[in-house]
Amino acid sequence: MNTERTWIRGGYVLSMDEELGDLPIGDVLVEGDRIVAVSEHLEVDDARVIDARGHIVMPGFVDTHRHTWQTQMRGICADWTLNDYFLGIRLAISPAYSPEDVYVGNYVGALEALNAGVTTIVDFSHCNNSPEHADAAVEGLRTAGIRALHCYGFFASAPDPRFPDHVARRADFVRIVRTYSSTGSLLTIGAALTEVGSIPWSDTVAEVEVAREAHARIVTHTGCVWGSLITGGVKEMHAFGLLGPEQIHVHCNTLSDDDWHLLARAGAKVSISPETELNMGMGRLALGKCRAFGIRPTLSCDIVSLNSGDLFSQMRLALAYQRFADNDPINQRGAMPQTLTCSARDALRWATCNGADACGLELQIGSLRPGKSADIIVVGGDSFAGHPRHDAAGSVVFQATSQDVRYVLVAGRTVKRDGSLIGVDLCRTLARAEQSAEAVLARVRQTTPVLPPKPLPGVDLEAMARHNLAAAMG
Image (tube, rainbow, N blue to C red):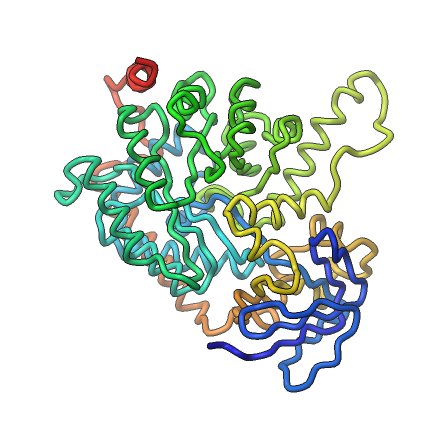
């Protein structure tokens, strides 16, 4: 048992706890994997000291939707639409991944998250081309030492004789649950649904049922393709009793108010990926709809095959977008707003306590409070971004970068110290990612010389979706 004590001393404690509030000069005491005290001043003997003077001490960020396996495809989708992404990543690149490539993607991607102060990720893992791929994804996260809700994806991107049908994929999910679920582990196994409408309705029902039998959290892409039935199906899911509070619905740009009412009624959670959605043509961010229907929004990086892997970027862009959306009607009347409708502290909630709640971990992480797990970051250092500092929340949201994250603790274990990841040979790690990327793309070029590929001829996805959803309504 880890009984080491760590005294984080003299920082601005941005607790994100409604009762404790902020401590302009405060201390946090960690014993083992738990926070045991948060106070203006502590007297502590026999503890390792982190001098946080001039820094901000706060809970680690929670990313509620990240396709971590794609890490070594960094930036390849810079000028791709969502349709390009599906054809290029999901149908061309994903089948070319080996288990080793999945391991590298998850390992390097988890390290990238930790480096940016993201201590928890929802790993939407839909590159399970074989049982070995599924194991490799888990091992990559475990080796990195991040807290993760690893959501096993049922999507079939490549044929494998051990996955002759959907039943076999569900059986492999059960195997992963039995193999890797253990009390006290940083890893929790969840399920990532195949896009509703893209597979037979009976398989969608079966995916939800097998996840519920395992008491697993569920993440799914919902309402993100305009003019399409694929990723819709909210009403159909409601009719079959498939909506629930254990679910994170990602994107939700295209949903009707009736759909939003059903999600809110079910207690479902929502994850918003600002960079992806605005750059790939997915439309308005769902922050305003979450506010209207009483859902606590969360944020996610989604794909570093397009954009950044830090939540600073997502908070900044999400807050800017929502302020624009709220102020634009006033501007169009030839006036200026007198107040702002959402604050920097709201953005921090999206990236901390709201994310913890979406993962079902609100009693463990998301705020600094005695008894909670010691998932803590210290932000500051000798950079222009933090000096002078007049508003702690504003400094984090609008000024800070991954380089300003000086310390990161996950369950009390320090994984980043003095601005550097501990025990990581960065040159070797990045070289491994480069080698993996080269190998994957070499395999892709053997069958797909141009990326993104052209749409598949003779494939009518909408007819397929109409058929699948029609089966739901009988």
